[in-house]
Image 1 (tube, rainbow, N blue to C red):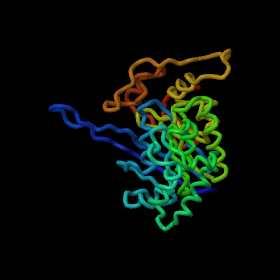
Image 2: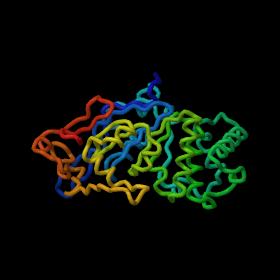
Image 3: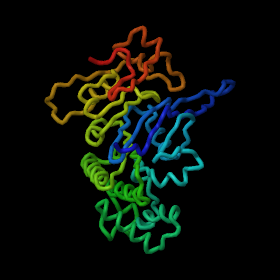
Image 4: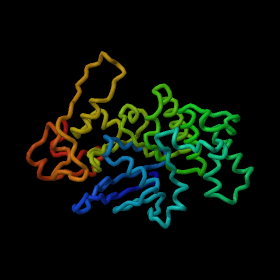
Length: 318
C-alpha cells in the first residue's frame, strides 16, 4: 500500500483577534481539529463556503503559516518551522489569481528560474535555463514565451506559467488554492485537464481548495466538506456526490449548476444567519441553519467517525 505523502492529525490554526476598546482579545478558530491523509497520484478536495478555513489549511500545508496545535507530516517528516526550508521543495502552491501571482517586471524565464536560484544555488545558469524551458513546454507554452513579460499573456496562460513555476523544484505535492475560479469557463477545463495530465505523468498529490462542487466532481478522488473550521463530512467523491450524509453537504450540492436545464431541481435554501467564527454556538455549529435540527444538536457537538464515508451529524440524510 502506498504511504501517504501528507498526514494531518487534529490540525488546528487559531488567531488572536483584538476585542476592541476595553474588550479582551478573542480567539478565532480558523481550523479546529482536522484529520486527513493524501497519497501520491491522488487529489483531496476541500470545499465549503468562504470563511470555512480551507485557505488557512492550504497555507499551513504550504508552510506559509504554522499550526497552532496538532501534527502535520510530509514524507514522513514532522513539519516544524526548523524543517520548513528543506520541506518546502516537496510542497508548492498555485494561487487563485494568475494576474497577481507573477511579478510584472520580470520576464517569464526569470520567474521560472527564481525557485532554482533560491533553493539550488549550485546549478549553473545553463542548467537553470534548460529546466525552465523544459517546464514551459510541459505546461503547453511555446519557446518564444520564455522572454516575454506577464502582461503579454491571457489569464489561462498565466496560470500555466504559475503551474510551471510550482513544478520547478520537482515537488511531490501541489496545493491548488482555487486555481481556476478567476478564469473564464472556457479556460477552466483546459487548466483542469492540464493538471490531470501532469498528475498522471508525475504522480503528484494535489490538495485542491475550492468552493465549486462542479469542479471538484471533475478532479477529486476524496472530498472533505468544511464548515466554520471543522470537517462536517468526509468520503470518496463517488460516495459523497451519490449520497451526501450531512445536511450542509446536501445544501451545497443542491446549489450546484446542472448541465441539463430541463432536469428536475431540488434546491435547498438555508435559512438563518451564519454564526460568527468568533462566537460559534454550543453543539453542532450548523444547527442554527439546519432544517433537521433537534434538541440534541444544540447541546452536543457531533464528530466524524473513522468510517470511509462519515458525517458529523446526529441525524444524517437518508
